[in-house]
Image (tube, rainbow, N blue to C red):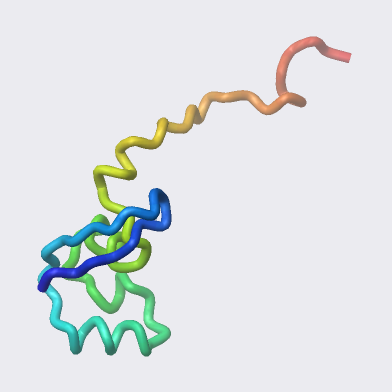
Length: 79
């Protein structure tokens, strides 16, 4: 079904075809089950879109985090 969501990242409306029914969406939204448990057949990008309206393309525009960035107290200059 076509699902339209407003992106929490950009505020833009996006519509994507996702293999779920309206009844499944309604059941998920009224449940306390984690989305990955409720929709294990969907991709992580499809589940993210249902929850936040953020598309894979929007996520791809974010800069990657540098895992090697040192925290200020870890930098040289000993005491």
